[in-house]
Image (tube, rainbow, N blue to C red; front, side, top):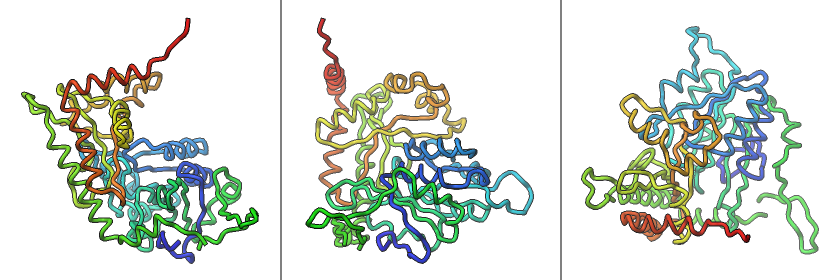
Length: 395
């Protein structure tokens, strides 16, 4: 509770196996029978959120998602305000509208969002769930939970507790709203964790959270919030600047090697970055291929899908290029799905700067991406990738 910077007088705490379990358990316990609506604010595909949406719909919820403006992926404010406030002209606020799920920042694009959306939701009769799982160690200290007092908070401890990259998550429930939840579902749900310890004789007993040693948190405490924040901000902004400075040689139209999705260089952006590598023709190199090549170079990259993107008429060409055509791998991945689900997503490469990341790490990342300026390198790696994935069949 000290790490989360919240008072035990205000919130109770439930541990879950992972983020997906946390969202699913909550969806099974929230009273969607009476509070019918669910609004989510995510610019990327998230297994935990998709699980929550599916469970909520099965229990009668009407689900809406915020939209994000191309190309910087800022929240479409007019649309979200209409969803929160409603179209009714009556000044009387409707209470018990439902649940508003709001992340501190995007774990894919690095976009950060104003806390004022939480205030607007609460003023208009919504319960507010704050998703703080994108925060790194020490950032919880400045979250301001006591100021905005969200009804529920979900966070994870990925790569926080020592050397084990634990995916353990937790749900904070404000005690004043706790009675609205179905606690029988929470206590019996799959994914709930009990903390135990083993003594020297192999017997287990209930563990007091204060006999626990958190090496990751201890290291973060030694560094301090100022050093961590400054270093992460400088590293992610340097990386973006360096990637955007790469252009294909002999390109008549000045084709950039990298396309960044979401905020570019910005003082208050998050430590995550979503981008794609473009070949000399300006076409996207399959993100999964880039990830596989990175693995062979001992570089950790992820793949994600940007969703809920809103294109104005000005960017109709970009919409067709990014959402409809995609890559052959995109089409294979979305084969059998509805056209709308294919058009709603953009496959991207993701990278995250952590509190232990140093300049050598981001420079190595930049050097790797710069190899794609060589068209022969891309073709060789593509054929090598295909060859390694061939299946041998004995006749």
